[in-house]
Structure formats: structure tokens, C-alpha cells
Image (cartoon, rainbow, N blue to C red; front, side, top):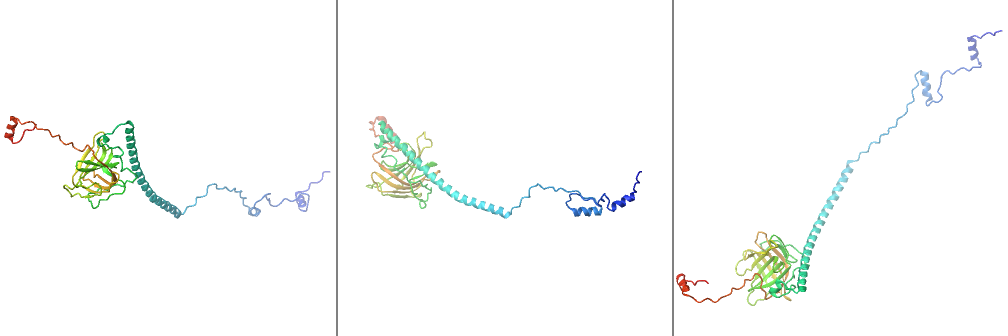
Length: 340
């Protein structure tokens, strides 16, 4: 016998009254929910559930912080101040070093020249030879050599023809001559006729590179030493010493010379001689285009019984020939004797 099928209404009634099949839930909740309240509200309102948003990190570097302009200006001011102070003291140090190097170079040049002269004299003695200067005056190279090239510094002389403004610089004599530097390496007094000639020599005495000669005429019975001379540019006459400058425009040729009997300015002091040496001081400015000048101290050897290349030999007097009739006719016509 086939059992009778239950009607749908009977099944529904049976389920609701605690049958075997449980009643399904009225709403469907997700198993994992981040925001349960938000999902419930969305299901209640009937709206669609929102999708999950994944955040994106901003990997761009952060913006650099702006520096204060006061810091920039402050750093620039400090740099400028440091450079200014460094430049001031650095320039002073550079000038001082430059001057000291110039003095050292000049002194070294003088010492090198002295050493060369001494070596030359020693070589001549070893060979048994006699220099031209020795042959003329009978003195050694040491006696007529350098007495002015010592360790004293070089202070340049300032050219002026105003004797009131002329100053004798400290240190050994130096200046300019012929448009170039002039540093006498030796000084000496040569007897030329009735004059005592003060020679301030750069180079060899026989053929100097540059030289100043001052012709001094002493009074009768006056000895060399202890004199002081002041010559202004407006002085002229017998009492004014003649001054001559000599220089070599080309080392291969003999020196040129030019003499001055007036128009120059000079202050000359001579000390007392000792052991054949006369100490002295000089300032001399010549009225030439190159403004030649020499000033400073010197020590001059006294050289006696010498004949220099500036001395002119005395003319030889010959005995006149006997007069003839032609000579008598010549003298009667012209009033003078006929030259031989």
C-alpha cells in the first residue's frame, strides 16, 4: 500500500514546528568581515556591498627643506672677510719677501763677481803672468782690487739735481749708469798729472763695464783725506771738479765716455786714510738723458806712480832744423816760421 504523500502545506507546517530540517537564516553574513556593522547596514538597506580598496604607498622622496637666506648671506660674508684679511697680510708678506730676495740677489751677484776676480788673479799668479793693470802701475790685483764689494746692503740712490734734496743712502755705493744698474766693485785713487782721480769701477780697472771718475785738484801741500765737497748744478769754474762717466754699450768694444764740468750735483765726503785706504761717502747725479746717479759708501785704495789710459803722453820736443833761405823767405812773406 503506497503511503499517502504529504502536502506542501503539511511539510511547511511540520518544519516550522521543530521538524528535522532547520530553518535557513533570514540574511547571509560573510564569514570574515572587517566592518560587520557596515555590512549589516548595507544588507538591511538593500545596497550593493562595497569592494575592498588597497592603499597605494607614495614612494616619491620628500621635498627638500628650504634654507634660510640669512644662513647663505652669513656664510658669504664670512668667506669675503677671510679672503680680505688673507689678501691684506699676504700682499705685505709678498712685498717684504720680494724686497729681501732682490737684496739677496744683488749681494750674491756682487759676491760671485768678486770670487771670479779673485780666481782670475790667483790663476795669473800661478801661471807667473802679469796683468795689464799690474804692468802699468806695479801693484798687485789685491791692492787694486775690490774694496767696496762687502756685505753692506744695497739701498738705491734717488736721482735729483737739487743738492738740498740729495741724500746719501746707507750701504755701499750703487745706482744707474748708461741706462742700467751700476754697482761699483772696486774704488781707487789714481794720480793723473796734478789731479787725484777717484774711480768707482764696475768690472776690470783697465776696461771697466761702467765707471765714474772724479778729478780732484788738491791745494799746494794738501794731503788726500778729510775733504768734504758740495757741488750744485749752478756752480762752474776752476774749483768745480770734472766728472767723467764711462760705459760699454757693447761688451766687445771699448767703453764710451762723456765728461761734465758743470750742471751736476755732488756731495763727497772723504775720511782719513789708513793703511793706504780712504773711506768715503758720495752722492752724484749727472744731467744726462738716462739720469745717471750713484750714492753710498766706498773704500778707495790709494794707487801711486801710475799711468792710466786716460793720461795723454807729453809731446816730444824736437830740435828745430837750421833755417834755410827758403825758410827766411817764407817768414818774411807770412810773418811766421814754416812748420816742419
